[in-house]
Image (tube, rainbow, N blue to C red; front, side):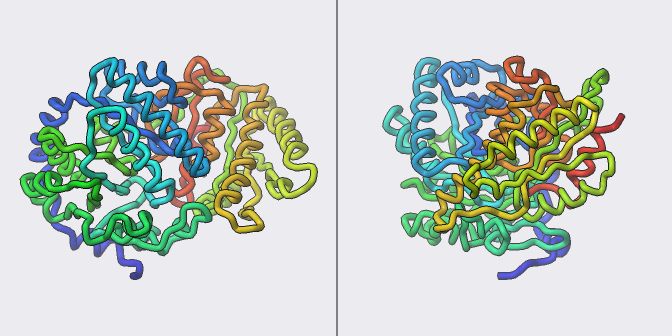
Amino acid sequence: MSAIDAKETFASLPPEPEFDKVTALLKPALAQFATKIIVLDDDPTGSQTLHDISVYTNWSITSIRQGFAEKNSMFYILTNSRGLTENETKTLHTEIAKNICQVASETRQKFLIISRSDSTLRGHYPLETEILKKVIEKEMTIKYDGEVIMPFLKEGGRFTINDVHYVQMGEKLVPAGETEFAKDATFGFKSSNLKDWVQEKTVGRYLAKDVTSIELADLRTLNITKITAQLQHVKNFNKVIVNAADYCDVQVFVIALIQAITNGKNFIFRTAAALPKIIGGVSDKPLLTKNDLVAQDTTAGGLIIVGSHVQKSTEQLNELKKLSNIKFIEFNATKILTKEGLIPEEERVSAEVNKLLQQGRTVTVYTSRKKIEAADNNEEHSLKLSVSISEAITNIVKNLTVKPRFLIAKGGITSSDVGVHGLGVKRATVAGQIKPGIPVWNTGMEAKFPKLAYVIFPGNVGNKETLREVVEELDKR
């Protein structure tokens, strides 16, 4: 399987249905869908399609009750499970599922769970959704018929066409299994065809031949009856993959999905951030600007933290270095391999950052670009090294004595640790996006710096210039 031309591929697809026709079907379907939607986000980047939605950074009974009580049909819980071991992930999802069941029983509310994960297919799959299924079926009368898999994310250039999941790179669509993401030390995979990917990740417990495929031709001809029938026939927790190349495909699928759920079918979802936007009824919103996010009276500098090591992040960092007004500090992550460890490095960088912010300088702290992996090549050991480095970076935020004019964190584990442990956020509101696929949180009053514009910049989103453009926008004086 090889890369294909993006422009030619999109031109060859069936034409999109008329917007008004789709809206006329979707709007009443959502209006009658009286179900609380709970999105479990394995890192903070999953709010990249939303605005005015709550994100809770814990899964206590109190927080879940608050989420159920909101007027919004949907709320997020940040699990950061992509930075956890398998055992930690299992424990976490067991507790979350039990707490959701308790609150749902108290409130007598129907609920739907979306396990939001990486649009390039990394993460603890199928562990997370299988734990959710097992616990909820034990605690409630719910029986799950199937699992819907939809990694489409237009903002990130992720498309599923003819069952193959692609990552757009420039003018090409590259099969996901041939990208650097598929070589991830912890969550690697080989298959680009999602039917084969299911069989690969479940080690043959679910076979490619048994996977139901929702085709673009049916989505774009509004063949709601056929799609609903396909969903009605799913059983034994078999998988449904949804082809999607634009948001109209998600909208049409949701119309059929709600019909199937209304008819008594139950599904768990493993998706990227597109499905929550549509099924949660979140409207489009213009991109945010400096005037939306930065207080006019602030004199402090901004802070950018780059922890992600994917190639795109490094390219964006190198482009950012072209800005002469930004001070760059390399955090030497290789110190983790020395006897002294990271503490002296953490203290050095913290002191310099506080000094520069006080002077009004904007600072970028970035980890040394060499990827550090465990000597024994053990996946969990490598993950723990990454987590330890992220914790050290987080401590730099924890040690801030000056509120920065803005804060950008690049990378999933990094942005989660910075938000939860560095800033102490318990509940944030998604303000919107500063660039497509790049969300901004407004931190709550309990945070170290309340009402701070916190930009959560995924490692694998944007082009070479995007990080520089975001910093230029926020750092205007």
